[in-house]
Length: 327
Image (tube, rainbow, N blue to C red; front, side):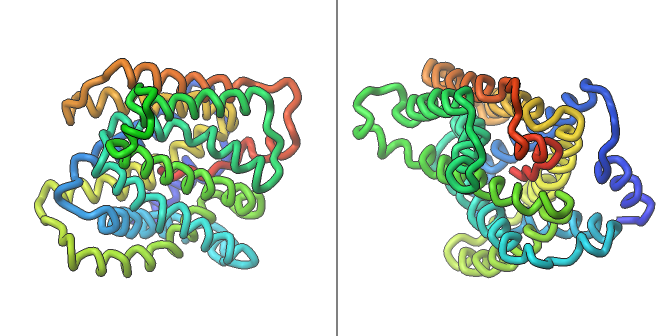
């Protein structure tokens, strides 16, 4: 990456810049679209590449780009410092565990189900933040979490009241739910780290710390599941390494700086919309009544939880311009 391009990217995404709400809305929609394409591609590539290998190659490329951008910033941002263990925890939860779990789940469930369950992530993050770092949870957030969980249960049960008889066919949904929980844990940890260092620094360094573990696991996976190399697979890996990992991250955080966390989270719920459109268009997946009911509850719960509060907690205000999302 040339120095001039690095400077241009840093000036566009690296510093808070006042801009209109419309630009912020556009940026967060770019991010959710990128993340929806990641899920659809993860589903379509399931027979050609293992979940660990896909995650390892994705984040190896993503880390290379993010670290190159970080190299143009302040030297302090390139040092691990006292955050080394938290950065490692971010790398383990958000890189080593989350991505392989998501791609593994996509081997057993549809991209449509996965995008709907992924929309639960902000609600799960709110619950974990309340439990782990004592971040206050409003009544609207609690109610939204309950409604969103009900939506996931509708999806997992396939709309059947006899839940335990359908659990065997819902393995992929449950794995994706575990992936969402891991990503939410990563997000909670990142809030502590980004209170002390730039978001780009936290994301680049945590990704870099996680990649060696993925590469080691990839070598093990190759023995049982070697990738079926083709021009299509190589192009898909390059896209996933750049679009969801780098462009999605940069666009989301630039959008958060313009809309605030609550405003951006409202538009996070466009993820299932893009997922429905893309999975129907490219994978031929059909939308059912179960998807409408379950997805409606998840999105509705997210919108309810994202309602502006009349009195914001200081921690929420401090975190309003700092977010670390890398789906």
